[in-house]
Image (tube, rainbow, N blue to C red; front, top):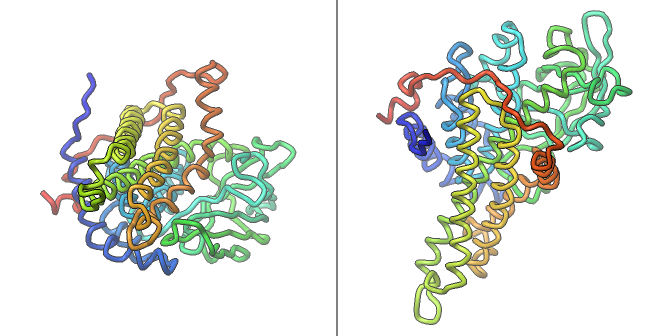
Length: 407
């Protein structure tokens, strides 16, 4: 049976996050973006509300929400600004959900629980100056010396690099093995030899922190290794599947924000004696925004439904990410055009939407990579069969106090 209606839990999540962004993000975001300021106190508030542990089981201090709720959180946060969806993508999608799948119980108690509670902020370190899409080519190394690994290398374009407490970092124990040598480690801020920095001059997502990680003979206890030696590439790819899902959902939110702003402006602005919304070519742009946004939302929700049932969704998530992010760029371009000269000014939010939209067609796999992925599935070069994964436990919204307040 196909049912597109939201559950009561889903609706309460949407209500909660809309109230949060209206109170704490929207009144400030223009100034934060203009000054290039990240505000970790807002991220902490997201933790207090349960957003940073939303899809994690109660067993590990999470809220036990389903993937549709996670999609709604990402969509609504990015309707306000991309920087706040990025926190969910990195902290939850790339780090916490990877720990949920791959870490031991002791490791989950040590790192996952404080992350689910929002007491510690987490990030993910894979991309390097010379290795992005080609993750098997990473140069960072991990050398075993007794009970520790010694890590050396650098990571770049790392969201939350200068703010995170926990780092899921990937290094190779044998570079000759390429992706089969990649191994995953959890690092903590304060480890000797681990330093971070912030990148400046970004086109968009200026209210978020993006930076680099330097590893200079960092001694990491062997018990901080996630999975076995050589399993890091599998761990990274499973994490990126989760990250792509959150990026796709966020891109739907950005496109919706473009549509909302354009429809409002088109009803207010008049030319030639009538609202510009009455002009056919403006209608064409607005209609294109609406159609692409609805299609993106359905692709995301389809992936969410499959994930709720424990089905691996590499193909579906890739398609959702490819469509939704490409559409968000086009929606932002159209939104600026609808606004005319005003769209070129930060007096109106569509200028920020356009700058923010571009990053998502690059990270979590470029649009070109997703084009190849979808072609390979269609041509039969990639295996297309359902692979069972561990579904999230079904739990009611009444278990999440942050949502119960809105009953």
